[in-house]
Length: 345
Image 1 (spheres, rainbow, N blue to C red):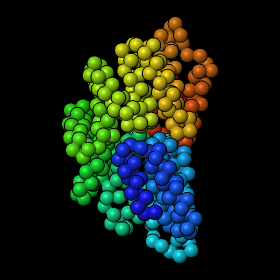
Image 2: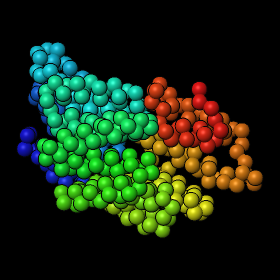
Image 3: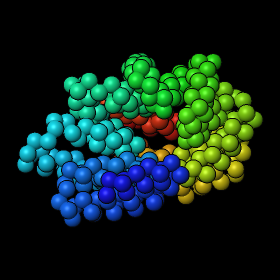
């Protein structure tokens, strides 16, 4: 059965996530039937990672929780290894973060980082620093995010983890963009593009294009933004990255809003809504709804907000703020409340 596990990596290299998931499910069933609970828990962990990367957050959450529960049962019966569930905790934290459950993600990251530090696991600790940095960037805690990205980058670079060195650089680049430090951002994106191109890492290269296109839009270079986002769209669509594909349509909608191309913006938002699901992308679908309302009501004299529309906006924003947790309100909610003149709870 271990030989069959090698096929999972081959499928992932070919971007065949569905086949990788099917193989992992078969392996999990075989290990359960043979009574190898450790291997079954490991298959659940691997399954959760692949499902998450393919955009199936809810089922990934189930798989990772099964893995954590399986490791706990093993340790309760006969201690296997302290902290054996740390990797699953880290991956579950990423799922929670992307679901908008930021305080819960932070708590899980604290648990797994303590384990990685105790075991002097430089690679895992560096990767987890990046995960935590992204979370803190979401809530506008930029100094802490920068410290985490830089420390994570140093660790990943020191152990020769080139892929995660690029990922942490991308985190720093996006943070520079949030701060409108455009020259620094583009310099970091150039480093990322070179690194991802040399591995090669097509998904990372596509994310660099997406980030650069969004930066061009915010800089007012709308033609450059249009061309770059189009390239990113094609790359992500080819890779089958549904969630990032949906976000690209959202970015292109914002570009059309900047151009006052309201009909085109609504088309892009509709495409984003078709790709993003309520189960796996609820906060992003909420953002799509808010931006759709912005586009429909762009001329407030001709079409002002209706009372029920503003109440729906308030309900959405309060729901996602509660999901994030006290002290972890994402910046997009703060900006939206200001835009629509809505006070927080």
